[in-house]
Length: 380
Image (cartoon, rainbow, N blue to C red; front, side, top):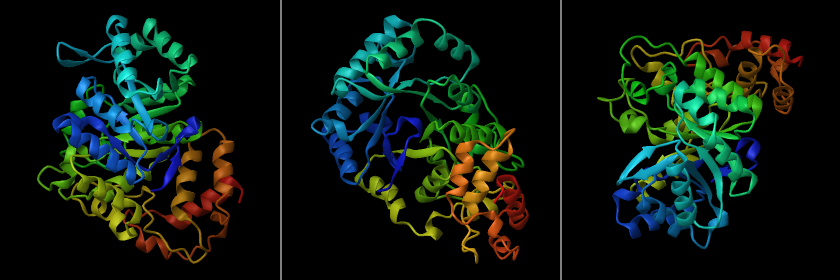
């Protein structure tokens, strides 16, 4: 298992994580064993947005004795009322629900205290003004939550969260289909309306990834498999299918992303996700699926897929393009991006313009031209 730094939290998280949403569907002992098995495969981050006692007990019992080895995303504002999940900002519901989470998870702390699920402007205003956000800060100042995070499906809200300065990481929904959709306050919109010609990543989502990288706010990923629809040609908006490894690779190649949290029912599904770490470039290749899909194209846009390799001058073209895309929208090149670019060693100025790479690009990116522009922008 490979690990990445989760933005400014400094936490080292496994590239492949554990989304706990499906735990309650199985007998308790079976789900406990599944989490423990995931831990033996190197997975060390788990999300618990679920308010039901069964799910929380399963996670707490599974990580007992190894609490310090697990990074838990625990949500503030996810409550259980009359046997039902209710998102709430009312302290009479929020505080008991979080205290219940803390007790059931164990250890006396939550690593990532997640402001739960803000997708709308109205909810943002309600959450960020008053007792709810005061409670979040109190938990952080007391060390009960080690870091403040926020979950959202809306890239506009995610950008607002990053700009607060106190949100250290984001739980965000990322997959090739979602990335083509404009921002919405209604999650259901993201799963429908894919008829027509979609031409690449939505600008607000691209802006979010740039901002997260620039501000060193880490991203963990939910809904990476589009509810399983990307595995089914009849339900996939691309008209063709992806594998779990391809979806994982897509998420992990977005700027700012540290970990993708997959849902599991079986140990075999854990194995299929962890297989990402030993997969070949061909097995990770999501770009060919997108490029060949009818009515869906990222033509002219670099998706950082790596098809351009190998370069005769040993330039990491995908990374150069990523840093160029991060920098070009700014008034000036951020120091952090400049530093990361220079750390590549072999930079865009080494390009000899042979264009061999362009013949391998599924999206017809004018790579030699972009190398020229990158060299000029970064000065090397």
